[in-house]
Each structure stands twice: as C-alpha cells, then as structure tokens.
Image (tube, rainbow, N blue to C red; front, top):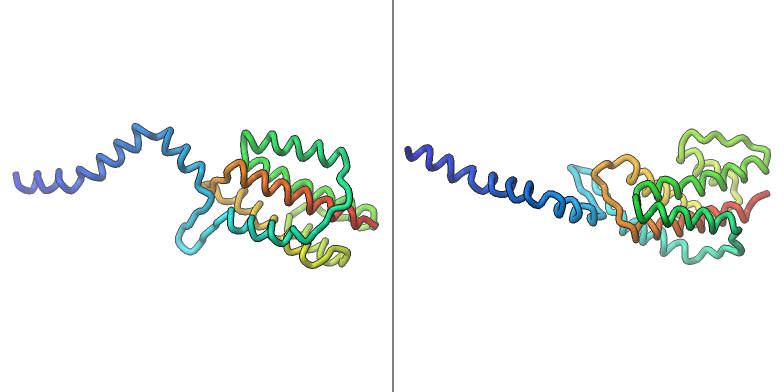
Length: 179
C-alpha cells in the first residue's frame, strides 16, 4: 500500500499540470502565439532582436520614391499580417525577389528564382547596392528562413509589420538602382 501511495504522490503534479493545460488549451495557444523567440538544443532564434538589428542598419538608407504599385502591395501585405504574420513575411520576401528579378532582366541577366540565397548573391555580385543594403537583405533572408522553416516559431503582427516595412524599403532600394 505504501508503494501505491508513493506512486500517486509521484504522478500527482504531472497529471495536474497536464489536466490544467488541457482545460486552458486555447489560452495557452494564444500565449504561445505571442512568443517571438525559440530555443531548442543548440539552435536559438529571436526574431525581434534580429529584426531590430536590421531596422537600425536600414535607418541609413533613403528611398527616393515609392510607386503606387509598391504601396498597394504593402497595404495587401499589412492585411495579410493581421491574419497570418508568418504568411505576410513569406510574401514580403517576394517583393525583394521581384525587384531583383526586374533588375536582372533590365541588365540582361537571367536570374533563377530557385533560392533566396541566390538572389542575395546576385545582388551582391551586381555591385550596384551599398554593402549595408546587402547586409539588411541578408538579415531579412535569414528571418524569412526562420519564419518558413521553424514550425514552432511564432511571429506577432507588429513584428511582421516591421519586417514588411524593411522588405518594401529594400525592394525600393533595389529598384532604384535599376540599370
């Protein structure tokens, strides 16, 4: 009988925690949705810190003009961010891809859209962008990869909106340097 009591004592807290987690599962999901960093074994991702670093570097970049098409796309992305911040980040990266593709086509270069890394490499090799722009685009690529490839990684709406702003600014810088 003593062994039975010891077993009950040993499993009481874990069972209680699982039971409370089950009862409040919707609240727990909402709480986990607010998490912007994740650490698992040797891998750690902190979206907010990396985004802040890219923003601080982007302050030195000035964009001369924004087309009405760019504003329309940005507005659409902001609407997507309200529903799914992760999807908005993935779509925001396409602004950079499209700007790089247009730049390559005008320069007579065929730019394969096989990987985001190839796009960054092409932009770096073109030599028309300032080095700090390339660094920002590379950081945006890494953040996009985290959003895409880390299923437990959650991004909130404000972080997605900040990412969208940087992606739109980077795409405008790439477009402004068109040949």
